[in-house]
Image (tube, rainbow, N blue to C red; front, side, top):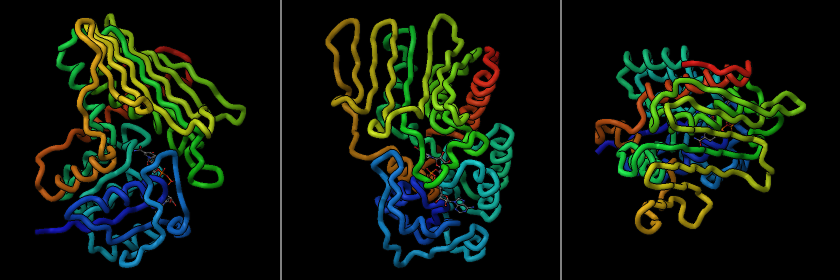
Length: 339
Ligand SMILES: NC(=O)c1ccc[n+]([C@@H]2O[C@H](COP(=O)([O-])OP(=O)(O)OC[C@H]3O[C@@H](n4cnc5c(N)ncnc54)[C@H](O)[C@@H]3O)[C@@H](O)[C@H]2O)c1
């Protein structure tokens, strides 16, 4: 039975998070780590989550400083790209051209044109490409999507999505996240998760209108979008303005004709359904593995040919970037953008 050999490229917060998940994945082994800043391997990078693996012992793992050197050495089946967003398109294309399977962190790219080039590169490669929109692998998120899509509780009346984090600074020094040209800012980097869910669950909106708050240093640290749907009010807020002691929280509130559903990871029951008829209930959902671990296990099975398809396609990932692109245009112009 084949074991997948995995190279993690970029060993910051997400690199360490994926490293922890790969370690729990059967028939997969991290055999190489590549980071242009090797001091990251001895650094206790925390990020805003609890999933990062803080190991500093990498015996048995090849450690290299450049992606080209990694490709020259070869000897791996999967390139897991956990790199700053501007590097996604070029390195995805190089890895696909080398015939590797590629898992690339979200957002797919900074703009739709680059996403389309990545999709074209995947079509030509024998390797498989997936964008790590981890929430597609969270069972509670899937439950919320499925129950809305099923129509069991009638039509959607409205929904709101809130995602708030402290200002990202885990990369050390002046973080690349704070440069909108590099990360796409709070809209592309953080809000992409809700943009993907909104597209997936309610379909592409007719229009978007966005309002924001800008810090004295020019960084947009909060933005709220109102989406145009017929007789249904959907809004979403993304914030990097939360206090460091608050860290990170995400909440969803969906009102249907016959039920209200609340998803909030900080509640004792992260997903609760309040039907108009009958008692409120907590759907049975398995929270024992993180969305990152579920995503990497599913990707490994797909790369090994044991799964036919994945819950996120390249077109879905591109469409999420397209929605955020329109939202950023509205954010900067103050105008409603018709899609
Ligand atoms: N899915 C999620 O929940 C989630 C959460 C946070 C970040 N992300 C995404 O993951 C990606 C990485 O974010 P992060 O928080 O890990 O950033 P980070 O700054 O912590 O880590 C990036 C790493 O890449 C390395 N690097 C930079 N240029 C390189 C190059 N040319 N070759 C090799 N290594 C290089 C850096 O030295 C650093 O170690 C981003 O696209 C971000 O949007 C996803």
